Image (cartoon, rainbow, N blue to C red):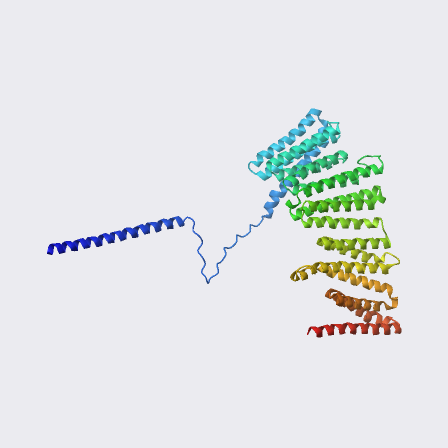
Length: 557
């Protein structure tokens, strides 16, 4: 019995030992799994969550790197100015000294020089890509000028046929476009086309020069349409119109001895071609350009056509000046229509519409004068202001109200009939202002007040000035101050009827000037009867207005 008891105790101890071993093995397994998990998570550790009561502190943003002005001038500007100077120097070398060489040497030396410069640029681009591409673009520009000079520069002329020369230039422009497009380099395109445009201005400017600049402009517009590059086409736009300015200043530079009408037709044909080219390029994909770029293109193109065209028409056929302004205004309107069909942004459409109205207004003095001119400005301003309200074009509204002010300031031109002009301006200002209120009334109540822009204040101020002028024309001269008081009273009445505070504010302003004139001028200068009448009527009107204010205040309280 004793042996069996001891044997059972040994078996129990062994069982407990095995249980302990199993627990230890399980613990070791859990520890190994935990260690493996921690090693995996350590490779990408998420940021520790912030304590609930302590707000997380954002990591400080890296300080913007300050531009080193000296380095920017030395790397960016000096390289461009240097290549421009170098190409201009080579161009003058070709103009003044290549004529002394033989035909083959003349051609070979020019293209060898440009090829060497381009090769140098490619070699430099391996270490300094931007700098090398600037030099490479200069080589392409020099090759263009060599091709240009082979027909146009008399001392270097090798190609007598203008048609062949234009074909060679077109092929060269195509080559520049293909190379720059494959390199995806706006720098190469800009340097080559810009220098090509300006080297053509080094000699006399003729039809051939204008045709060659048109080819280069077409190449620049290719990049605008395809790659949406902006700097290259903008610089070409400025260069093209600048070339035409230089030609326009030289009356005998083109078609000498020809009738004025032929010269004018030739000049306007080139201007129309430039305008159409740049407008088409802008309106192909109008939404892919930034707002600043599209507006710069549209405005510069309009300014170039308008100023140069007006200069040429005014010099050669002044009676047609008004017709020219009308055509340009219609062209701007057509640009707005095409832009609308192409889904152009509202800012670009407003620019076309506003510049069209400005063009028409600038042309009116060439056809109208005195009373008719003021009426025309008033009509155009009213139509523009109302159209701007309907279309939601704020720029057109501003132009319309501005034209109404121009008409208001020009009312001194006609010797008579000013009362009707002031009445028309009063109605026009009021209609433009009221159209904005009607438009805002259709919006939800929270948005109505936001549409009451400062433009309405200018409209009410213009209406007040027109009313003062109208009563100044209708009242006797000795009762001019009383007329001002009547105008202020009428503005108060209009403000109360329409429930528009701005008319009442303008009335207060007119009233302040009236009181100032009454005290400083009329108190000592008017005869007794006019003085009595002015003070009594003005006092009665002031009391009436004050009574209305008192009654309204009592109703609100």
